[in-house]
Length: 136
Image (cartoon, rainbow, N blue to C red; front, side, top):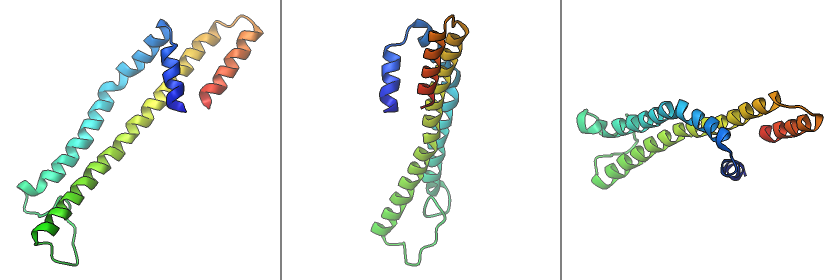
């Protein structure tokens, strides 16, 4: 539902709206891109750790059975690697949530500009309804 609303809003946006939205993207794209990159690079570093360190697996886990046999060792290594990448993906969800919050912030900023130019009671009512829609 929210994605559809965002898509419709962006398609119907005028030049001033697009400038405001683009400013939010430009202000934060480097920070969030860097955060996402470091999440995955850290996971890859941990996954590759056993290639350079004297440990068998990416994490220092103890198992109640022998892990020296090749198929089992490979399965455990693959599992720990996939979990590391999954954790990175989970951390990157924070960036997605922040982007949704920036969309709302941009819409509220546009609404504030619109409220400054209100001349009639009908225009104010329309702004109040828009504010309720943004909060939803």
